[in-house]
Length: 267
Image 1: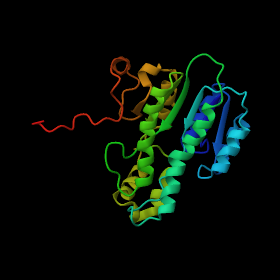
Image 2: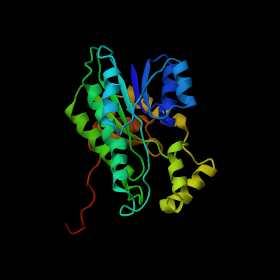
Image 3: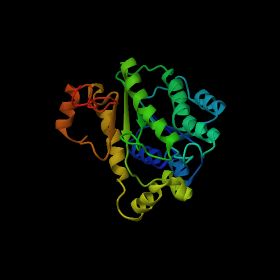
Image 4: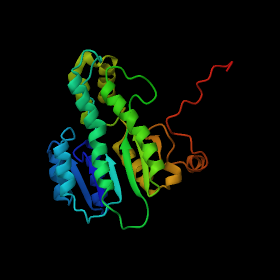
């Protein structure tokens, strides 16, 4: 079984559709029911409502997941860029709810699903999503960005702690998704990202969803020594390359959060 947290998201729904067509059993959570959810259910997916900022809702989901049911892959696909704006101007309660939804609520579910024992051979795969702000300061998106940075590090930490799991984090790039609606709604409060988002959406500049799906499948099929604990960019990393595969096998430090290369010349 493959589990997708936020199967109602555009990435979650695309993954679910691909996996269902390949014959996999898919179980997922949604916050807002949509036509995509209806279609996935018609094709065999099992869907449960979950509000990631409500611990009771999370516990309810975990209680409904059959404890005898084994799973092989878990994808944490939830993402919400709100609230958008300068840190001191936004409501802090809304800021905290964003961190809960983008990070803590998903980890709460991960914690619960890890307690469902596996009887199958091989490692379980857990995929998290990162993205904007990894390599720079994305102004006016502090709650979303800090949650995604934390996702990158928890990926490495848990991959090190659990040898029977394989954790990896993906940055999907600019994919056509409703996550960008919040930037358009924010307008000038989004700063320069408002105009950039309009530009990206108006042309054919978005990263194909198919690439995101194939990168997820690549992570699932790859060895822990290659992808475990690492953060990959779907757009910028040559994950289809055998050369990169070799380099990853032989260098345990690359594609992880590090403070390398920051020394002054005279140090």
